[in-house]
Image 1 (cartoon, rainbow, N blue to C red):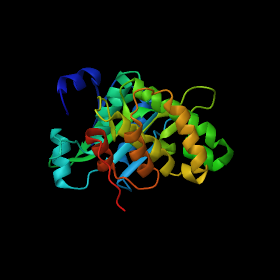
Image 2: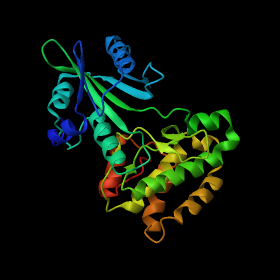
Image 3: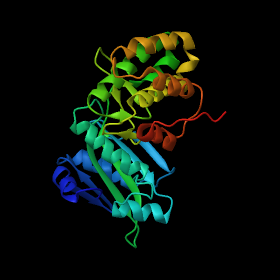
Length: 280
């Protein structure tokens, strides 16, 4: 496993083996949960990635399954090794980041377990990630599509969540409306899909924050609010970060991120080097 294997063994000591699959779990599971996992394992993967609640309402678990598509990737993940750029494959990044964020008390679903299937030759074929199910929650994008007038509420919840994550040292570089999970009551939002996130400090906080606010607008929210109104909401939210934000650096990245698609690796460059140049 990645990093110190003893840590993973200590935190996920319970093993479920079925057919060619091994799952490592944080706690013992009930018979009905085991049966649901066995059914999941027996299903042939119809897509490269499948994300869905475990088919057992009592268990309250959410599962992700990725079919590994190249021998290099299979061997890297099996050995827990990073790529040449120092990053792990996205599934392992999500595993590492979700565990660390939850350990810090950040508002993310708890990591319940992980696992993998192997071919008859012993090579890893599929990777599984198991988290708590956020029962009753609705993602922010679904909410504004259902009720466009709720866009301000979704923005406020997302900005509050963004600030809370920063307070725990977690920088989510893919925080858009669909990754903001809103509770059915007056509780606080939670973040999902942490494969592209960091749990360490950046020397480019202003640029990173500029990207995060701009990206949230670019990914769908621009359809439901004017740019002027969104800018006003951002100005209010920035008061929480004063005086740490360097406005020139923030504004440069914010203006670009609002209107240009920025790939996942480019986002990481912003965090590590503060660099973002317009394609136009």
